[in-house]
Amino acid sequence: MELLLFFLAVGVFLLAVFIKEGVSAKKREQRFIRDLYDHFGEMPKKEYSLERYARIRSFFDKHKRDGQIDDITWNDLNMDDIFKRMNYTFSASGEEYLYYVLRTAGQNEKELAHLEETADYFMRHPQERVRVQLLMRRLGYTGKFSLYDYLDNLSYLGKRSNARHFAADGLFLCFLVLLPFQYALGICGVVAVAIYNIISYFREKNEIDPYIISFAYVMRLLFACDGLIKIQIPPLEKEWEDIRRHIGSLNGMRRGSFWVFSGNASPSTGNPLDIIMDYIRMTFHVDLIKFNRMLSHLTKHLGDVDALIERVGYVETAISIGALRTSLGDEYCVPELGGGDALEVVNAWHPMLAEPVKNTIRAEKGVLLTGSNASGKSTFLKTVAVNAVLAQTIHTCMADSYRAPFYHIYSSMALRDNMQGGESYYIVEIKALKRILDAAEKTHGRVLCFVDEVLRGTNTVERIAASTQILKSLTGKNILCFAATHDIEMTELLKDCFDNYHFEEDIIDGDVFFNYKLMKGKATTRNAIKLLEIMGYDKSIIDKAVRQAERFLDHGVWELS
Image (tube, rainbow, N blue to C red):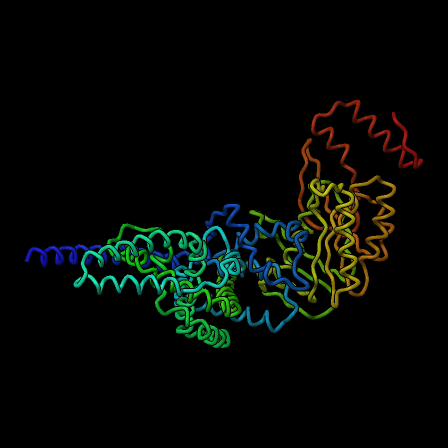
């Protein structure tokens, strides 16, 4: 009777623990759902450790193809900041695929139209969106490493046989059967096999532990996909069919998988049932046996896992596009791509500026920008470049309208010395420019490029001579170049193949004011020396600099005053 009461008390305690945890989990989920409805489109508040951000590019690195945004262009345009600005995803799959999309400037109008239809659907159907986001939250992340980091290293585990585990378990059962007949021998055998199993368990468990995280993620991916295909989303019917097919190939992993995962491979929470399960695992190696079977199945179906990650990532990317658009209100447009020979953008602005100044341009041939430092040249180049990238990736532009052909997009703007490679700034710069020239020759289709202060790493005479020839080479039927320079001489040298635009500043009451408005024609003001005076430089320095500049302009010869 006392034993019965003890087991009854244990049962009541376990039931109370389960009920309490279930109620708490339900409340957390309800708060999350409420936030999804009430705060859709609010600025993301994610934090990125270096380790976490390093793994975000994993899907992109595994799916390289021609025409993607290269590292130089990505860094020039500070696209990491734009990715963070629109990262509304809740899973590793969504996060990595969104990064991949932002680096893959599409050339297919049909694919972009499908993405547009899907993003628009989620904006107009909050209930379906929230159901998807709830599934993505349950899918979650893989920790500091990408799933691909684990999957790429499965080969290190080799082929793993369960024969030894089955033999030990069989011997254990034999000794248990022997207990009523030969108690001493039976108990010694049970204890000996148990000790051997526990010792060998931890040795082998340490080998597979890093991979359990990835296996747990694959299982959560399957469950998330189970939920997705139950939601009626008309634009995604084909994706749902693909998901069903790939789930079918991976279903063999599911049976008995609960032995491998305790709380989705999270640390023990002290739950009594988890403790009991741990002892069963250690004694009978049931999790090791199942892991080996899952490993064998997974290595044969890695392509199915990759396909599911892509489909799930696509869905979350579409939701993130909708969230970004919601955050922008009516300050965005859907681009018109594929027609005409000109790039035309009306009231374009940069998404990372708090109070941007909007500018408009229509470019049928090269654009050459002049103006003083801080007048807005580089920001304008980045504004047009970023909008070109966003037009062909997320089908969304920060402008009243955007019309352009499809482009392969390159830049050479914010370069640095390569100290590790022993290369000077000039060498880095000419290599960056050469890759654009090579792309223009080899690429099928049009190239759009952005060059800021071409060849700034060398002397004036050679810079102007080489720069004019390089920029002239960056014009033609299949290439459109936006360039900025301080060398006014180049505006005359290149006037037949580049349209001149400029930014200027006003000096009022001893202070400098920039309006950041794009103006036609070349810059006509020379305020660099005037700015020295405003900054408080000695008057003798200012006067001598003015006289020296005037002599050069009159006679073409430099003299030291």
